[in-house]
Image (cartoon, rainbow, N blue to C red; front, side):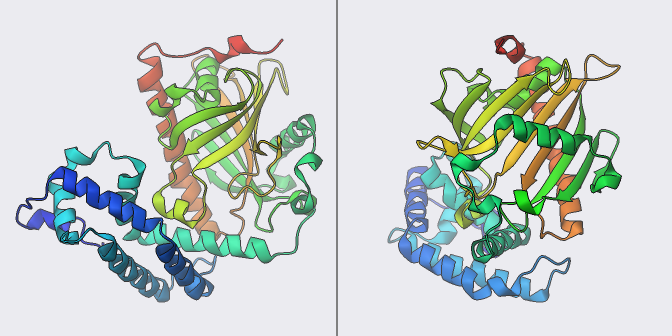
Length: 382
């Protein structure tokens, strides 16, 4: 890590008080929001983005560009500090007094996250590839879906029917396996041209055997109240946009999410507005299917310009032999299509299992163990 965040372990004790540290971090946060910093970051990305591609090769040039980025970031951070404050003293205090900084607000915690992520080459490469893909999407010829307005989106019944047909398709009919293990199967397939919102859009299909009952899994996947922070590390908060209760089968909500400072800086939104819609006993009795669709308020229409979400469908059904388990099938469309297969395989074999197992494990420890499970099936519309 070029930014010397952890070097303070070997340095002498700093007399910098926690209050002064928080003030310095808030100054850094204000600097990171400034037009001068954002102009520099955008210019840096545009200057070097052509070097990065979606092939399997990690070029030596990437490392050199990453080093330049870190050096430029260091210079800007130094310039944002209050007079008389040194970066080394601040880094030293962050290491030697970690308990004083656990509950920082966003303005103060953002710089700490950036310090940690900026030295991570993988996070930097992901940011550059996200920027490249976004740039190419903007210049690509519009697809049929890309030309649609919010009012043109197919009806939700049609969306669910199409996704259920995709879920039932055999691998020989177009799916390519990305990962198979004892408890999950993940496949990918290109989105039909007539349905794409981006040239890089693909479908991902996952079949997961969960160590949760149907009631527990429905609660974990469909509940967006404050309890969700207990099992979903990316979830910050939720606000109702349409509907009277989060338990209703058709609501619009805005969720505040945390995907890491670099990706948010690159353009992934911190808030996501989506329409959550459920159908019970679909496609067969005993199965519940939910659609998560990007939505734009207050227009109350499908959001065709959402940068991360196109469509996500989740079906939950009883396990055929174990009532303590269930089978969850997910279908989603996203813009990972230009990623090389090894990157997608790595993402699916490491990140996806960690996310799902993490959700499951934290849900069991925070809800099942404490008796906090909510039976959302009792709120179903009749």
